[in-house]
Amino acid sequence: MIKKVVLLLIGALIGLSANAQNTSWPTPNKPITFINPFPPGGAVDAFGRPLAKQLSTQLNDSIVVDNRGGAGGTLGAAVAAKMAPDGYTWLLGAVHHSIAPSMYTNLSYDITKDFEPIAIIGSVPHVIVVNPTKFPKNDLKSIMEEIRKHPGKYNYASTGNGTSQHLTGELFKMQNKLFITHIPYRGTGPALQDLVAGQVDMMFDTLAGAAPFIKNGQLIAVAVATSKRVDAFPNVPTAQELGISNFIVSSWYAMWAIKGTPKDIADKMSAEVQIALASPEIKERWAAMGASVPKMTRPELAAYINQEITRWGEVVKKSGAKLD
Image (cartoon, rainbow, N blue to C red):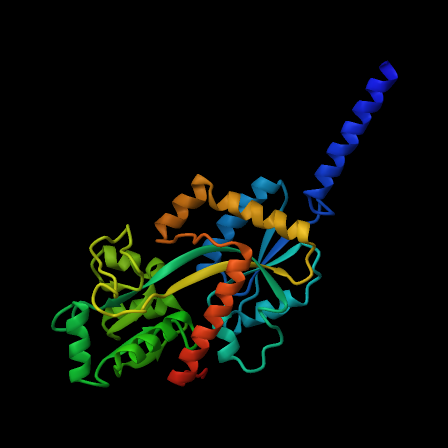
């Protein structure tokens, strides 16, 4: 009888050990790396680093965020695409990776073939903001009428050619048949600084970037590019409310696995990311940035990315947007 109990206990321990191995990385003492293909301090860092910290706690493993900025996020993505698909390297990215295929003609990777979507980790709506001194009336309809009366007089800032802020402006121009001069900057900070200073007239920025300037009155938010009003700014109407249909734009952020990553590891990371995003710490931090996390399965995210590639490809083609 005792021998039988001992054998049962040994079997149970072996089963537990097998389950543990099935839900952990092959080499627990090897750090996991998140490649962020943008410079430190940007929006992807704002989402990626808190997420990495939370996941590190959950997994009881070290996670390193490796910034490999350059060429609109394409250089770092190319580096990630060449990494071994062993579950130790993951790509953090953004809407920019759905824009890149139409802006860069010689990419050495394919975001839909060399990577597998794991999770969307955040989405921030765009908002139309203006310098308070630039227009006679600071409501969207009046601003559009003013621009139509004086084509070419007004301009808008962006965070650079080929960015979501640039193409959101081009989309707005095309939808409403407006002539507004594009002024590209090297990043959100310089663009917003010049907008506040009155060097430029308006901007189609993310709510996360513009929010502090809206709150202190340095900029006026005339419309958000969402289907419903944003809780943090309930007095700002949606463009749809003001008669501009289909102007729904967000900057989204996501995580990809290297193509060929074992399915059990990809599934585990996807599940752990969902747990992390539901944590009070992450939810509070995302809310402060005006961000939400759309509910998407991995196949739904893959389909969404393909839709975004098509959408922005059409905007690039019709607007003639180019990299300088």
